[in-house]
Length: 394
Image (cartoon, rainbow, N blue to C red; front, side, top):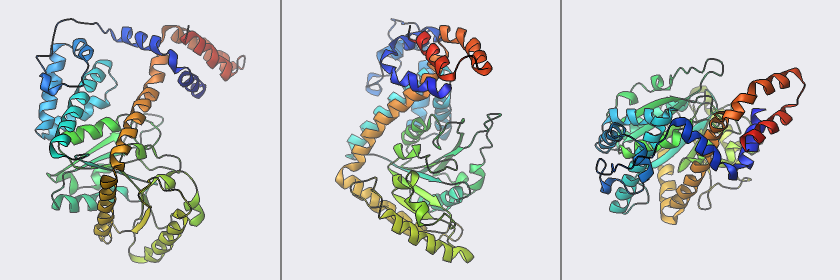
């Protein structure tokens, strides 16, 4: 019934103005006419809404300003606090997070215009099935990049329990050397049962890492299946990591995550697994020829690496740099990020729309009765969902 409700709400989104007013009343937002722009200077606020400044009190704005100052000074503690803020589901914290995001985005635009660059960072999504070796791979790749002068951030998403909601957050323990590197930052976050392999706030966390001066950002997803590739709409380069026993050519031909990746990496190419790695790499190379590339200026590649011995890691990074050069020179990187900002907006709406729906007073009042009738079989789930939608849009 929940899926039916969500589909109905999205289709009727043009009437959501009323729901947002309900959400505003529930949070207790009040328009304050006292000017607070002097707390955050005009030079640092270009796109932040004046209404947002008027909504927050002085202590909240001061807190955001301190976080922003810490981020621009590349203070790690400020970055950790900023990511915690954007991950919060508390209504007041969400308002503070929006103000901080506006400040950081303006700061990034200023740096890009000053340096004459399309982007000051490069975002790489790392996805694959459970046990593909994503964390070990990032440990080896990250160490090599920091030695070359890169500032590396890893946003690792850990699966949450569907019963307790808890998460082990163990990805960081698989990167013991990178986690103590002064030029690296690793942030494990629970998925919160959010589908797609990432969290609801991964986009915002990426922006915070960029604001703190990290120029190479990896997003490690949870162990995913064929249809979970949400991270592809957040990054510049999407890498699919597969083990030597990753299926045959027919598996590679299946639509889904494979057709969204720019590079397929066959990991664990060492020891007795070398023959199997060569075979699966050959089969995926053949399969990719029959797929439409996600980029108009790049043909997907298949690379073999060993995260244990380090073989193939430098060659893979060379291919990644070639990809970045092509995207920069053709302007596709800029176009992709524009599209991703639009996707980010709609995904944000989709993520919060059920919260808005559930908070509606009339809906809350009728849910227990309708759930009982659905459980007893006196009403179908679809009809009960329609009744709740009618209450919502009255």
